[in-house]
Length: 73
Image (cartoon, rainbow, N blue to C red; front, top):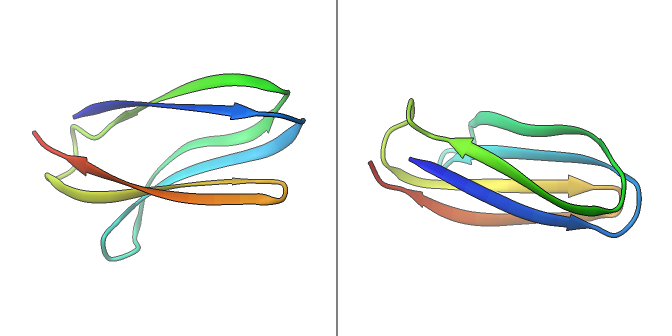
């Protein structure tokens, strides 16, 4: 139930990465801070969550992306 999420920032920016369930309920905030340019890795521990489909959303200054992940225990 542990996943690593790797991401790259090309310019200094506030970064927020959150995890949502299929109903849109926020279940975790993985990152919520300012980053300098570079590559980063954040670990998501879903051991307290039920198996199923979840979404993680990354928001930076001028960029937003949502991706799907499947949690299997």
